[in-house]
Length: 236
Length: 197
Image 1 (cartoon, each protein chain N blue to C red):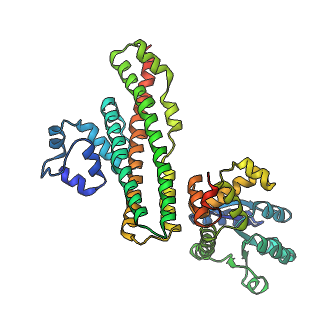
Image 2 (cartoon, rainbow over the protein chains, first blue to last red):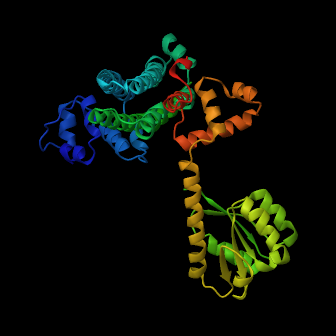
Image 3 (cartoon, chains in turn green, blue):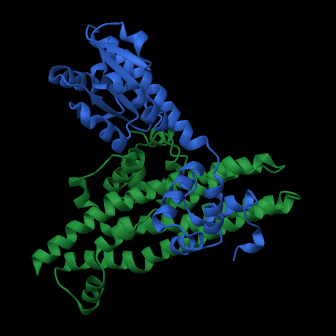
């Protein structure tokens, strides 16, 4: 299949391929060719795109062969792009709306406060993943590969379990949904309706993207680590 | 869509079972219970509060008027009567009638209409209503950052009641988080911005 056709089918994949370092303008090249040129693991790319595209997609055998490092690296890139681009962009838009306003200023300030609250919640969530979950996942991977414990990875391995993560992996999207509900149902739009509308559309897109993102964590990363935990227990 | 609950009251086993089987073909409904004993009927209806009661007229006979008054209006329940002949349509005041000789599609048509009407009502009741003054008061306390326990103590109600109110508020407004509810409360002048910490 041509890479261009994949993107035509689902424009939400544009930021996804960007995170892989793949830039648009690939002409008629196939997915295979584009991945090879950009040194992207083809199998992982396919699993990812499928999981993004189809909510019920669940890779079984393919799961085994995806390198954990690749998944973690990808998730980290996604986190960075949320915090550095998407969320910051929305924040900027809300701020400029606030600067323009006169009588609506009070309401926009409310929205800005709310969004800032959301942003710190999301940041906290991401930090927890990067500081605790990912190091754990990489330690598990290292143990499996070397088939032995070192002092360091043993400590990490015993300090956490993926089950813990699965339980606490609550949806950070709740606040986001509330914000758009409030903006749609309960606030009269300010004079600059274009900007206001574009903020709402951004919120929808961010929410959708976050949903995709958590699906990768829940359906690809977690099941894989559960399998690995089991085989570590069998090994020793 | 909310599910519509049904109770069937019919003494004849054949009709009871047959009607259940036909009703299963309607989506979005559940049969709470089938009642064959006239004496138990009042209690069961009162306890389970179904959306629709499908009853044979011989299960109600002289008590029918009572039943109508007490349950049907109080519970906003619809009544469908089953009978052998059409003459009962003049005798009783029900929302719909099913006759022994009706074929399956006729029965389904009759029931479907009632179920749809009920479902529609349920939906609009839940989502379009504005908050009651009690709920507004609770929302105000939530927005001020009080816990369920604190709200219960201040308003002299049980925690369970507070939780129920919260559920209803969230359902009506479509807002789940406390900070979202706070913004709503400010927008609707239930509290001022200065009151929020």
